[in-house]
Image 1 (cartoon, helix red, strand yellow):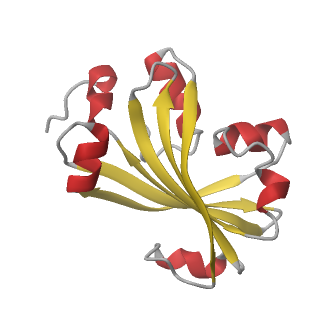
Image 2: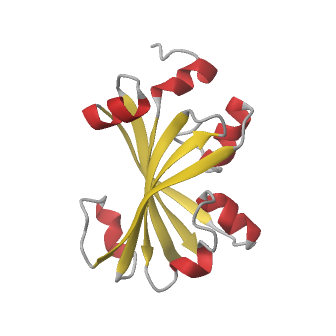
Length: 157
């Protein structure tokens, strides 16, 4: 659902946990034309670019996801008027019509994420483009916490 669905992950997290999903902004940096170790699709996001890194968490403080998004720097203020809101909340307030184009799904391990989530991997993630008026708006990369098994059930084959 979270990996393959084209709905808002922040809304899904809120429905799962019964708590509002809040954003802790880790960093917002101009990266110019740097590819930033991002998925290849970063090349379709016009530059110069800005990178935004956040934790998505419950109102009570439980981290649920890590996300990075890359934006055309000259347009980010137009779409993220309140940078402490989840992207979907900002875009919904503006009534921005979007197409979410999921391009990759991942499973992997990261000691950094294990420490940040306070849960061992593996971690599931994905990346996708938001399209608006036929143009790429932002590239988003998300990794979800294994803590979500509390709501979804343990992963079993």
